[in-house]
Image (cartoon, rainbow, N blue to C red):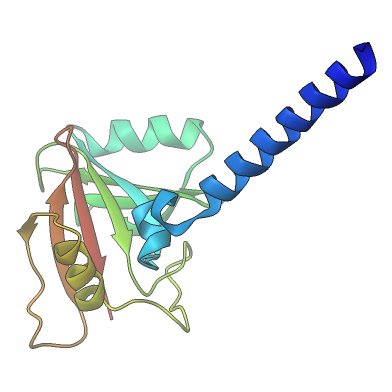
Length: 162
């Protein structure tokens, strides 16, 4: 009797696990980006920080191991890099901090062979129901940008340079 109870419990556990696995793998239970094949190639990611004192911020981030990668003190912005991590320090250019993506660039600001044009990304974002704060002109090609805001008020910039 003990053996048959153990077999029954084991069988139920295996059946439950198999059912859960199959259920979790069906398209209607996958996240939207998987269901709709909406994987977007957003390119390099950086945090753009609005700073009060560019020199003080530079000194601080250099102590964290960042080095100037682009920009200049004269231009009032620096792009700093620590391995694959990028931050932008911008004095007096915008308020608040911005999550920035650069379609077409890798984290070394090198052109990527394959990338999603910002206009294609924009179409996918709008089709998914997101509201854009600013849009790229879909009649153009090349450099363009768009912005949107996440549910917590964080501004996201997609800035294509090519």
